[in-house]
Length: 333
Image (cartoon, rainbow, N blue to C red; front, side, top):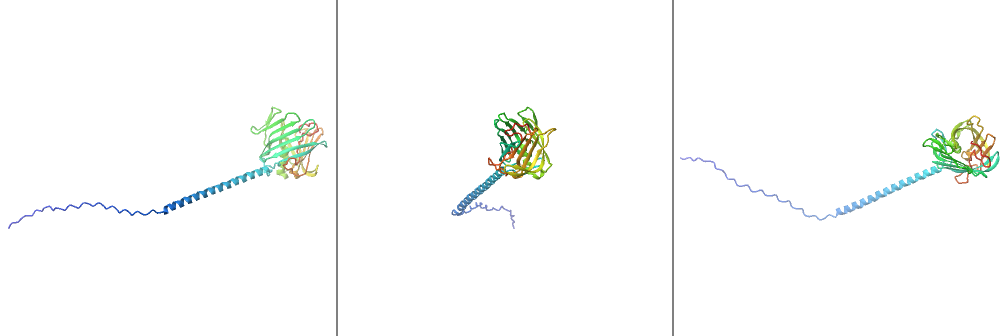
């Protein structure tokens, strides 16, 4: 018996079939254009336009409101300035109320004999003031005194004071607040300028302002010091409250508070008396200056016994204690 050894033979494998490429996905069928997108865009555009118009209208309304508010504020400020400022505390702690604008007139008398009429043109704009005193003098020419400046925490604050007597050149005093000096054209000298300083005419309105601000403060015996500049010097004026008295004016009797300037130095025999009447807004109803030789210069309210209006020709005049028509020129008060 023959045995045949079998040897293993390699087995032929069939080749693997080639990989098939993936089939492309079927293209979606074209859809018809949707008109809703165009409609939505148009609506959005219209809504945006409406919103913009509304915003513009709101801005315009707001601007109009702001303009109206600004106009009202300006109007209120102007109205407040047109009227006399309400009594307010001064830097010194005193209250003051500067008299409102008005033209004032006074009869002038020399030792009781009637002379011509003096006038004061008074302007108060709540921030600035101007005071012009004019007294006609026959054969000499008018005496004109002017004071102008602003209103600060101490009340009336002169910046320039001027005296012109007849045909003489005016003497001017400058209240230089930048250098705190009083500068005179009549003399090369200068003096320190203190807060609250007045000139010889503004001091009357300053006194009236203080009394208007706090009438009850000025009781009999109360003395107040004023720094008063002339055309070549400055000095302290102590003014005392005497009390309430009756004054006989051209149009009748009136109650007034009497103030007198005390002696400024030894042997000072010159007197100055001022009567302020509440019925005419605490303006001076009477001013009397008494000279050392006995000469009396009197200024007496001329017109109705009521506060003057701002219309020219209304009211009365605060003339000055120094110059009066028809009389020899007095010395300094």
